[in-house]
Amino acid sequence: MSDTFSEQLVASLPRLRRFARGLTGTVAQADDLVQSACERALTRRHQFQEGTRFDSWMFRIVQTLWIDHVRSRDVRKEEAEVEDDKVGTDEPMRRAEARLALEEVRRAASRLPPEQRAALMLVTVDGFSYKEAAEIAQVPVGTIMSRLARARVALMTILEQGGGLRGSTDDAAAQR
Amino acid sequence: MMQRPSDELLVAYLDGEVDEAQFAEIADWLDRDPSLRARLTNLSETTTLIRDAFEPVLREPVPERLFAATHAKPETNVVEFPPKAAAWRVLGTTKRQWLGMAVAASFACFLIGASINFGGPSGDAGPTKTADAKLENFVGYHNLLINDAYGNGLRELEIKPEDTDTKIALPSDVILPDLKPWGLVFIGGRRIISEGKPTFQFTYTTDNKDLGPVTLFVTNTTEPDVEPTFDKREGVNLLYWRHRGHGYYIVGGANKGWMWSLKNDIAYQLKAM
Picture (cartoon, rainbow over the protein chains, first blue to last red):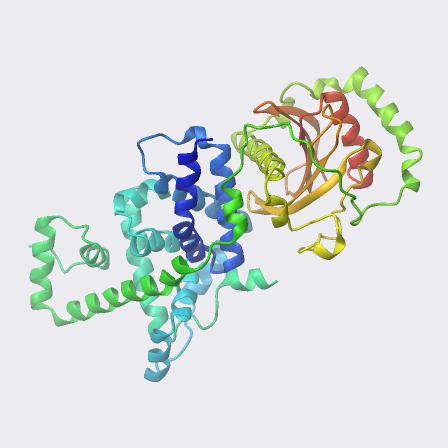
């Protein structure tokens, strides 16, 4: 293994952790996900093409592992139900408090469907272009655009309704 | 003139992902439509909020186990460990007294008739692309832990030979096999995620380089049972089978004979036969 490969891996850890945190919603699951991604990257480092973006390659591994995980748990249906659920109140003070609490924002994000969450993290938080995010998620640019819009609108709605006070299905699963 | 911009276009506008013509038209709409401006403001606020919400993660100290995960030397296979005593959740030895005979008998059967499963995929149970990736990953996990032994990675193991250091509990149906009769000493294990399911990795070492180090992976699975099958990835041997909701994967440099014997012992101890 080249030193450069390892150095790039180390350098990408903080961003990978942030991405994974956004996907999983919990510290422990996020770090497990990043660890698995590092290990997969090491076993498949021969597949990395020199001259391409290392961070994109790593984000793709994290995203793939996460989506596989979500599919295997079959939590999509549950999360879609949560998305459609109307919670909270319109009380202005409560809304203001929710807006101020970053934890509430993270909780709200964790209530989004996994694909929307990933698009939101890649573009809005990590600054990837739509094209780069599409390559990482292995979907067309139009799909990223659509997921992002739905994610932003859903997030706005959740926060207006009182934030992610109910917690995510992932959180609940993690505590079981 | 375009229709009233959709949320998709507004978000793309915020993200700087619209072309010049679209930008001008959206800007024109925003000048004329206060409700659209309000919508844009709200969407813009979510951008700031979500960025701020995850920004602190970048300043958190990165756990040592993640640094360890970036420093493996997978191409190195041979390693010697200082022997350690394994005394954690092992089975008693009384059952082992007759086990040698059973192992020997089944090994003989293997030599006569079971070799159909060795040397590659067998029938319907042939590895799919996913199965290939899983086998490669297990070899990677094996190499990673083995090579961690050179440095300080063993400190990060969740399952250590000493009871007091164990950080996680095993499910009731997963038992740490005692392989001491083979000269294999348990050096540690951990929980990993494979295909979204919890998987337990137990690694053993020995002074006998023909046999060890060897790693056993026990994973949950919904796939049907599969007879023991031999495979090889990156020069490392694997023997795996599935039995009643669990997958068992023995990984190491041991030859087929040793692997098969270990499989019999492990299958007996874990009631996986």
